[in-house]
Image (cartoon, rainbow, N blue to C red):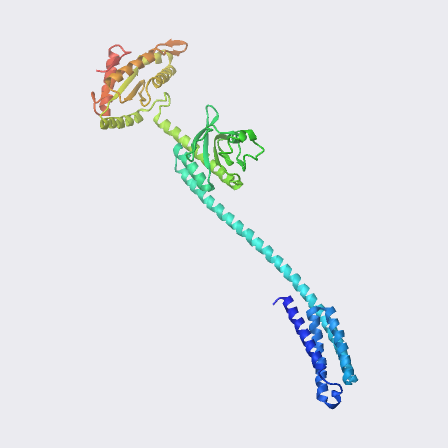
Length: 475
């Protein structure tokens, strides 16, 4: 029951008792006190009960109403004792004022206690609100930490995934996939890598099927490249850093975006960007995660690049840049099997530099290295795509012509002879017209296994040398 309801009940009770007492008192006839002492006693009891009414009035309505009831009760009681002729009973009126004083002080005490209680209640409510807000903030903080832990768990997966991949194409796919999973928001992802020769961005990978118009990046990507730091744009239309005119063609595709550079060895090797056609899609926390992914991605790309170079060194001759003998023999065996299954043709050119020892003796071993590199460049520019050229040993080189028989091999060999002859090399200011001799072996006419092709081509090479050099021998 609320305090206001309690006061209403007390007020109604006091008024009811007051009216009832007044009615009962005036029901006693005049002079009744002399003839019936019991009636006088009842009257005294009723009058004394007014004290309760006065106290109830103070409790229910306060000092002013309690005082009014006290005065009114005293007046009625005085008229009553005069009416029935018991003047000596008028002293009971003093108890009314004592009750009024008691009610007044009780009311004040109660009011103070009520106010104190109200203040304590307000303070308690305030503390409860503060605690509730604190609990809510902590709950939000816990939720935020849980979300971050989930994201960082995904980052651990990213690290593990990157550490197991060494091929650049696989790394690029992983960067797009893990960026989407880690940030957990819809959006297009673009991966640009820097062209080291032109020193400009080139689109290397992207998510989604939509066509990317800016293959070399747009003003936002160039901003990241120039400033070498991450970028977040909540709304491209409202961002003062970029010209509104420049944004007209972009805001339909990307209204908000985040981008971060991939940095390796102090140099930017690329940019990873995520954008969305809606504004305010990404947060600073998203940008931090993207920045972490780019750091990991840069390391992975650099590792893939080093792995590719290592693989290249394993299959490339350090002097000429041609394939090494071991790698060439492995490829030749595979191509012979593949050609056999397809019932096709394959030819082998065994090439040797004429009078190579003479150049070494006349100009030194450095001259021999120059000639080897020169012949390798001529061969690389002459052979067709898909053909494989290797340094077989010393000054000998070998070329595999895939899908071509004896006639095509002879024509290609003669083209090589002319190319070498028409491209002289300068050795210590001396122009040397270097020539080569070539032996040809073809599958399946000459041999059906790789070792047989090598043997026959080598024999025909020495026949070409024996016949005077600078020529081709195919039989």
